[in-house]
Amino acid sequence: MSSSQSTIDFILDQISDRNWVHAKKMFGDYAIYYHDKVVALVCDDQLFLKPTSAGKAYLNNFIEGVPYLGAQPYLLVSGDLLEDSEWFTDLIRLTASELPEPHKKKKKK
Image 1 (tube, rainbow, N blue to C red):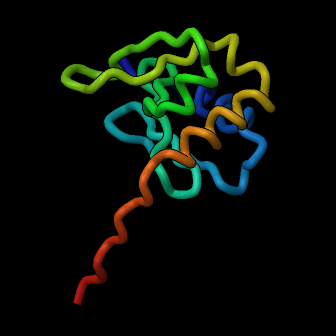
Image 2 (spheres, rainbow, N blue to C red; image 1 turned 120 degrees about the vertical axis):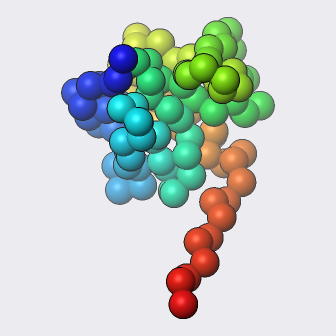
Image 3 (cartoon, rainbow, N blue to C red; image 1 turned 90 degrees about the horizontal axis):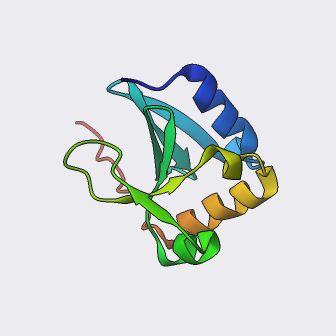
């Protein structure tokens, strides 16, 4: 089962730093990028946030879930938490701050 475009649009609209966030479709589901870092996956219309210490502390009582078969556990963010745009934006920022910078692609000759 894949995720709907309306779910992605809603998630992106909830992040107030709109200039720094985008989604890429991957195998019917999506990766959410913040400052070019993958911070979350959206699979089957559910948001799976990359696990970080800051994200776990901010969520307080967090639930882990597996976005796809064979994946490591991510933090499952329920739909009602996404309603608070300011809170959700802070969660995304905190998560991104703990993730490593993306690898730069080498230019083809």
